[in-house]
Image (cartoon, rainbow, N blue to C red; front, side, top):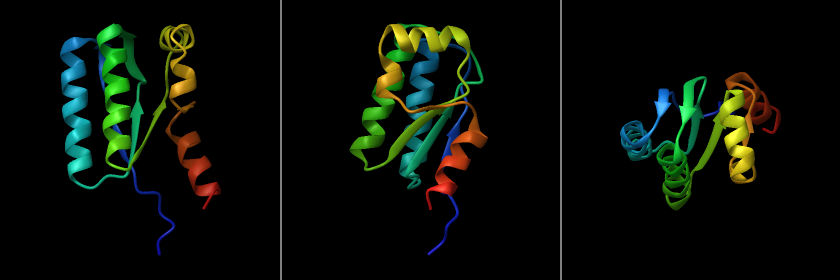
Length: 110
């Protein structure tokens, strides 16, 4: 049994809107098809999220959970953090400061 953390990182960029939302769901679906069990969405390069983008994140979370996986988010900026707090998405998603904080928590728990 390996103690290596097996996860896939998805890194959208720019504005996470309806167009990007479709690409995000497709990319996550492809990762799940390749048997990824943990998906980390790194939002470091995302400057803004609209309602379509927020819906895509929720949809992605449902898709991952349906397939028995886990989805996490890291590296959100202040605008995205405020949106998450206003919509209570900060209670729905586990958000990490960055990818290394995510890895540290998982490797410490093994």
